[in-house]
Length: 363
Image 1 (cartoon, one colour):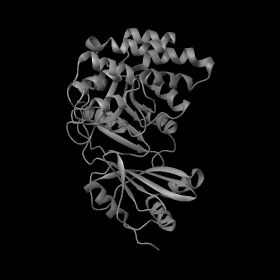
Image 2 (tube, rainbow, N blue to C red):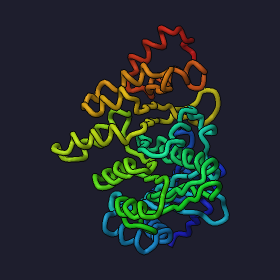
Image 3 (cartoon, one colour):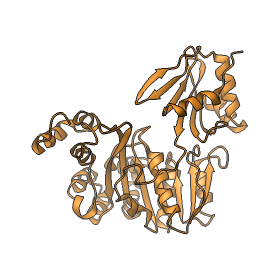
Image 4 (cartoon, helix red, strand yellow):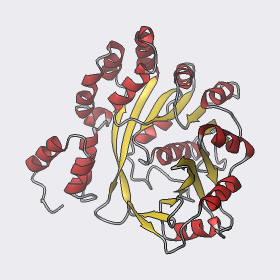
């Protein structure tokens, strides 16, 4: 059987500042460096080796789940290094494959991530629902961790996180933090959230709202005195609101819109863009705060008008659209024009605004 030292590979990946490690049958492992995948100078990995690796990092429950669903997510901490990985084990072409995403050893802060200070408003509210949205790999979990970290160092509250898997490990500071992992401490998000409400929480962070039961429970919790943070795989605030509403049967839409208009505090939609001023990436973010005008639009179901309200609420509410965020990054020479246009969902409109503002084409 092929000798394969996973911990040694992950240590090397951390040293090289790789964001992800791909291990697949029939080729050497790959590291994601600066957005692209680079093969390592190693032997190809055999299917038996992958089966053994997968079994070695899964507990019995995760193994049974993998056998049933042919895919499972989990957390893994290698020996000898101060780092943690989020792991996806799945099947492809009849063989096991593993992708490991590196989680930074140090806890992120709003400042270290370059996020707008507006984010701090969400951490100071006593109750309501805050959504962090974006595509896979856009840094949603990292942003949530920064929000929880901000509360941990400033407020004496009880925080419960429900994650699949646990990513960042929090130590109590001012706050008391309980972290639940799906498959280890609870069976499902909905089950964990229901039980968490009986554990005297002030704040609950739900890693992902995947099903109607979890969404309904989260909204009700936000209405009844809890601050709820969660994520969705959506690209904008308006899309996020529609996604929640469409999760429910049509005869419930009016009730859900009413509840959401009252419980929602705000939506942050983000995507990572390559920096031009230094190495690495930074988050471009759309920020929607549930102002009276937006609350009325949600209640009436006039969701298409929300982007226009966001764009006109920069000064008073400190909201911003995704293109306004990209434009600011371009103006401050943090990213290039090319990168901004690549990240925009409306590149023609962004190009027009860039032209009107007379930015140097070489930015």
